[in-house]
Length: 229
Image (cartoon, rainbow, N blue to C red; front, side, top):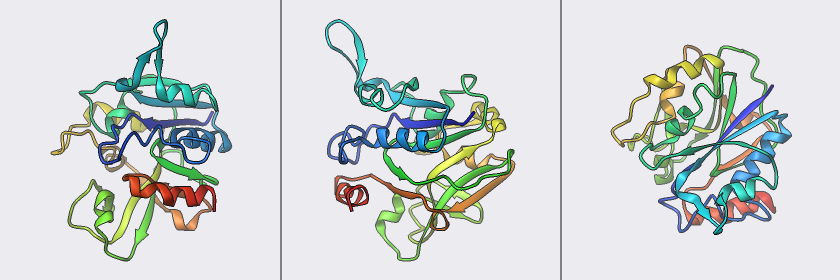
């Protein structure tokens, strides 16, 4: 079994609108993530969604993202309440429901291609990118410093950054109760990475994966160019 967990419960606070509902070509980013999972042999797709996007058509309770996702897969879902912040919280909702190794994707990222080989069953794998030019945009990423992943340190403007995906071993689910909110009042996914007994970083430039992330409305054209070169 290959389990994928897609995190699509964000609030799009820095985007002009809801980036999870934005169309990139024919599909939304959560749909692309689900299709990427299927292309990489997913047998189980789980998705964390936000409670804020629940609505009613007058007869049924529905969810805006789920309406789109059902076009490409039949996911299991968990709803992230408004008082639980951060990607780590979106993962922790699945404790006890998922017990196997899991690939974690981000619903506001674009994915294409193939996951790299990750042969060690008890190691946590996470992907990185390297940016040699200093940029304010790099401050929106989690920096990798001496093997520790630091969420938005506001001092590292170039170097290696966490990006793309995580593959958690089964034992990482035991870490979830120990996660604590950061100074930003969020449960960060970096806590899951840093608490792993064994972890391996994969440089995305050494793979055939296509990856990019959307943070601001200005990122839309760049993602469109990846989909429709």
